[in-house]
Length: 83
Length: 519
Image (cartoon, rainbow over all chains, first blue to last red; front, side, top):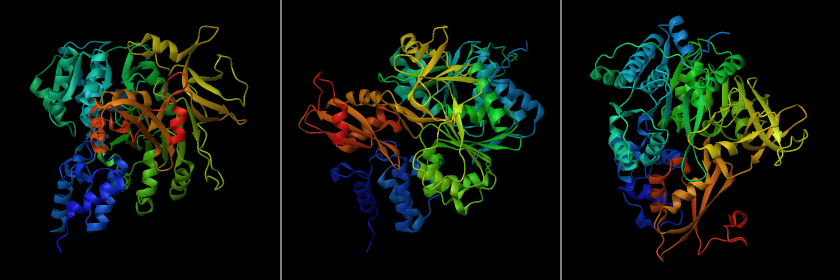
């Protein structure tokens, strides 16, 4: 089965960091870090989730808004590491 | 009497003594020696003078933390001006307000931030000259900007007086606008001298630079390290929030003196896998800015028992004013935070009751501080400045910290809480009123009230209670994004709660007590 990374990451963000939010408000292009949706501790927890769930390691320079600001960017980064 | 030595002079002395020693390391971007940093800041001094900046002016720094920004600080100080560092991560309107508020003569700004800044400054009606640099890193962007500006006639380092301003740091203001804390040359140098006596830095030391330059912890990092021929290791904002990547950096860079807010050390303790890294170079761990939860401090000092640990306390208005060396090991039964300790040797302390009388030892009261380290006042806010000081019968001015303390039998102060609505978050001062003022700018928000709650993991959680003008309420994501556009990121509330109407007291004011009960 093809793992839908976008849907998995979206689910975890909604469940962990946006309880009660209407899922349609969170899109693949919502700015997460620069938009103040995830604070630094939430970003850290999300990175730990990604590393564990997908068996990838993020480099120091990748943990920043240029690489992790949207669900689309996060999914792209994970895919680039898995192949 | 010996002539007064300006804040930049110890660095110039160290550059003569240790010309080839590394002054600043910017991991991933490069490093710079003492003589190179001295020379780069001299060229900036000359350029600033040629552009019309003079002794007594203010110059803004709108750059990411970098070797370029360190050189900018010394260039500005050497021309006799005061530096005004702003947060490039904050909303441009807030930064423009700050730079306009203290009427900077010039702003050194990275080109990528310049357009937004110029636009915001135009809205305020005055755009000072901007010295543009490329993306900073390793000092090269400033170097290139100076080269393209051409040779400027060489001028000498300015002679400054103790009361001349060295820098202005803006902190959260309760009315919704940040306020500028004016720190003089003597305020800074007396603090740096106290650090030298207390921590005995050596030229072999490697200091962390964790705090951003608009935060007063940076004064110790930069000016103490570069006074003693030590090496300053810049930790950028992204790594600085990420303990998993920060711990190996501390090990690789063999940092010997660490200074940060406790929340960063708590994160390192919980997520940094500290035992997997060789942190044996660490000899001093300093923390300031907020209460360190004892559980995390105990865990940290158990994992790393070798360094000496100091709790440094003080608002931006005094920089550090009391300090306490943590006695190790911390007993397992201790459940209260470590004391904030005793007053520093360059300052004096008194604890006052609300009526201005001195309290008896063992009674709680407001800690007030006088002496060479205490700020002159807030920029262009004479009434707030007056309110910030208590004048005693002899006419002496005491800065009222707003912090309620208790003096124990051993002479150490314990911090009990605030007398106003200011809280500390990740070491930053946050006036809850500034968050409320930010929320009120949203067209749908009818009422906004913000409270802070103690939280074991984050230290403090901020909860906003709102009522709405319309039937359809903004979503959580929309609210957070609106806050990110209007407030620094550390001020964004953790939780938003919608109410039909906020609870009121009998005098029709927001009932904060009731809100705390609801939370």
